Image 1 (cartoon, helix red, strand yellow):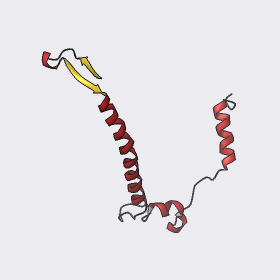
Image 2: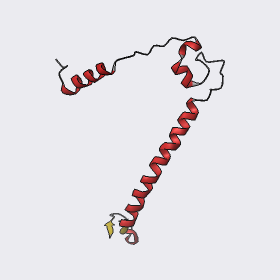
Image 3: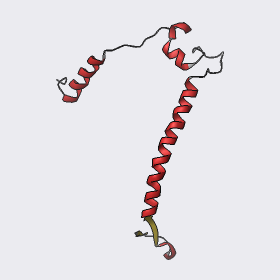
Image 4: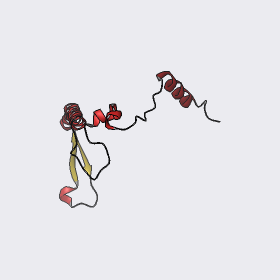
Length: 106
């Protein structure tokens, strides 16, 4: 099935164009089914490679130089403190339930 959509303000040769046909829709769906997982895998591999390789040293920066994943997991080895706040999973669940139900609002 071919849909023809008229366009206003265009020369008579282009008044109606073929926009969508069933095989084009199928092609788009197959393309998305194949391309999105492939692209996500490529992005994941790039992020892993970027976070597990050391940055170039820059004498003008005071930031720690090294591999970002190691700096994040063991900041004390680079002379920094770990300011992460560890929270219990049960506490986060209770907070989310209170927030979703609206019990915490005054």
